[in-house]
Image 1: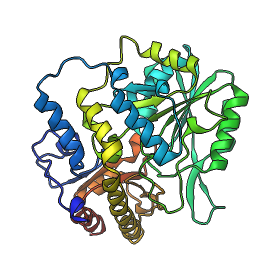
Image 2: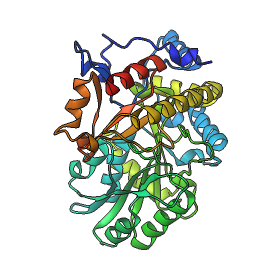
Image 3: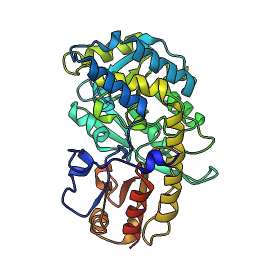
Image 4: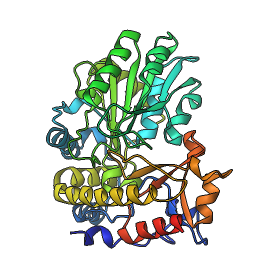
Length: 381
């Protein structure tokens, strides 16, 4: 079973964004959030069938009923969320989607609440749209069975009360810290947003990568308290490693919110990729077994990273509930630049400074065990 994920294709000389950064250097790229795994065979077959047909003309995503039905099926089976097909709005990535949300639900000079640390495109979204970013930090939850990161709810309550705050962009599961928010936490977010007239845009692109036994993802739009006040962003891209095909979707149950979102995207945001629709349909209808095997493999990787990192002097981390990303606290190293320290060891993580946490870095463990062991041996050398 592990052979599926042990035997990863080489990405050298393939123009891979992740691998180009350190081209020609003895540094293992462990940064961008895509995996090293080959796509599941049904996805490759679906893409091949599209190519074999021979015509790559316009295809309107809203008329692609088989891809829409695949999303409906997946959300029902995996997340107990019964959506109406008309709630779905196709987008060419979650980054364009949350930027569209900024345009749709904010006016010039408004403030956008952003959970931090967070990945760079999300941190950049408010300024790109002429808005002011207000950071809501994370804190260590010491009351749960194991230490975990969670939102600073006191800060969220305080900042959301500002009438200029009109939108909260959340990442759940959280990137980079890997937390899956609980029902109580989702309820608290819903309450704060509701009483302060703040709309929620929930980036849930890692929702199908829950690794911790007993944890369940709670889609924002599934909650009655958020259904009319939220945009839920999802994709097959992280789970099934098809990010390069530029296909994701927003689920917006409220008609008025959906219309505002669609209007904000009009003329700027392109239709999703024909190949991405084919791949998403296959992923959400034919790859359940592959998905379960991937989760099992990633759990093993996560546990290996957790043990190894916490045995390296100067490094520590909390175990992630989800994603294939490890958020490493390197403050104990006592060095001026933790990114340089890692690169001198021959490992290229995501720089913590890009997430607004300069004494941390993020390690991508969505790779073969052999590649992961090489990364960990180098860091511990």
